[in-house]
Image (cartoon, rainbow, N blue to C red; front, side, top):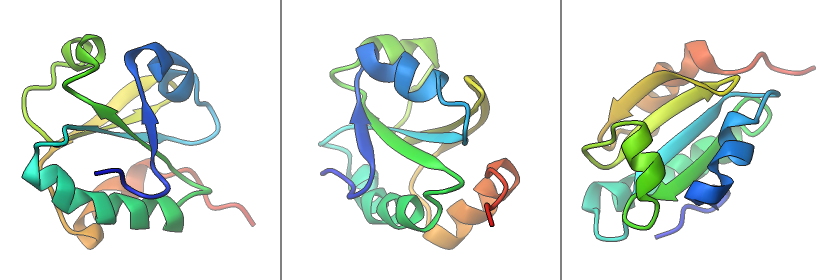
Length: 115
């Protein structure tokens, strides 16, 4: 299930889409179609992507079809969420969570609001 407003990336695109982003942090969801908690998280990520578009980029990567990135970041459970700032992972979370909790966990990593 694709979360609306959340771009899908592949191993080949990960460097440019995530590691190359310098304007705002990137929240990456490692997911799979068969993952129930991932499906639960999809609307939460869509809402966060829409509400925080100026301060956070949200992308997802399919763990089944992109094993290089999964291995590189040691993802063992789904959904896994990793926040990247200036190309470096700064926070890792595992499991679905409500929007309010996710925003609390992301607060210190969000880019400053623009006027």
